[in-house]
Amino acid sequence: MKDEERDKKIFEWQQKARLAAKKRKGRNLYIITLDPEVLWDKRFRQENPGYIEGMPCVYVGMTIHNPGDRFEQHMLGYRSNKYARRYGVELALDLLEGFDAAGLSEDKQEAALAEWLRDQGMAVWQN
Image 1 (cartoon, rainbow, N blue to C red):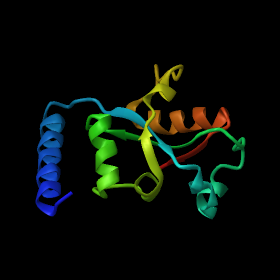
Image 2: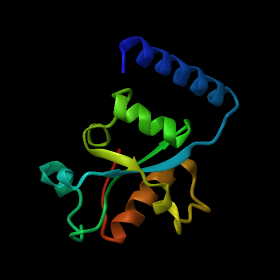
Image 3: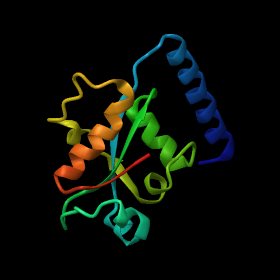
């Protein structure tokens, strides 16, 4: 992607974020599947001692943006997490099925989702 195209996208995302903040729009949980090569990263592996071999490796986040836009932001390096940027494969919103965030404040949902996925044996990174 050319620099001017990237800059235009970033500007659009910034405008959308400002508008969403003014409207006090809720945030969206999202999950990105990571390439299993991420398991070679010592820090990532240390955060997931209960990982069951063969289960997915994922990045969990929360955003004011559309999850598809946020995935693209990670891939382009805009406000991205290093694991999502280097090892991101695709959005995996289907992994949200069965997760119940009812009763949790918005600021606790991301950590609760990460823990829920770890309890299933997945390797998870969450900021």
